[in-house]
Length: 290
Ligand code: ZEM
Image (cartoon, rainbow, N blue to C red; front, side, top):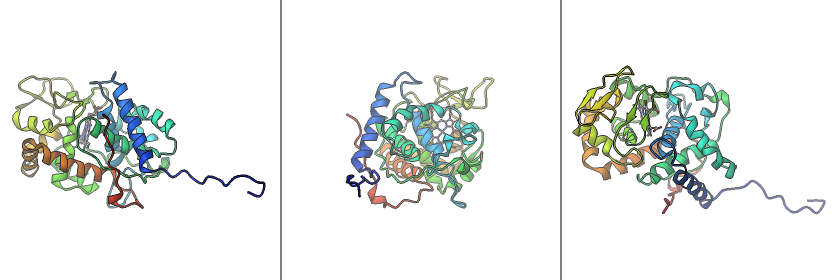
């Protein structure tokens, strides 16, 4: 400042209000961009946040939401991530508007915002993720394979650090969205309101009769009543396994219990592998739109 310049402004330190502005911008874009799938990008944003976080390995501490390495090949090309470019591209204008936010914070914040904006529970969220470079890409095969059974579910989610109850609660996210033949090979929505967060996934698992679909695609199930809905083999595993089934029944009967337990476990998912300096009580509770 020897030459009379003013004091340099130091790095920008965002406040809770700044993060609420990011939330609002995402909510606004969700409300405007309805010409996609069933009318909302919300479900695919939830899937992006999940796949960014679900690579976590508690033993090595690798993967997880801290890094946003799905920006890069090979991770972006992993079969499990097919279609998630739609979600990443949807968030690019938000990143351009708020260049100070990391991709890893943005993707998880968007995953929280999507649940709230689609009528789900409040998802308290906190910043602190740093983007990593291509060298931190996780190996293929860390995310679940829908053709498998309950042992596979326990192996994959156990590696992230979840217990049986949490695995079932997380699976309730399949209330949202659909499968696409050009992404996973599977086809169809899990319920009749794929853009509204409900416990319908559990209700349908319990109340419907699920038959193997007769088609040329991968083995999946369809409902006896309308033949328009879909369950993956891993979804059906939740009613075949006694311990999983107990929680499916509970969530089918009690939407409040599902919302509460989903919120807790989804918060945990979005924080896997993040070395926060903040405390859990510093989480931000975003105000939903309207
Ligand atoms: Zn999913 N998921 N998922 N999931 N998922 C799909 C779609 C969506 C599994 C899976 O293989 C698939 C969790 C758990 C598991 C969402 C959220 C969450 C699809 C269809 C498949 C195949 C992809 C496509 O074709 O577009 C398996 C095997 C799981 C565990 C055993 C968890 C946990 C989630 C969040 C917490 C969401 C929201 C979708 C819908 C995406 C969309 O584009 O509509």
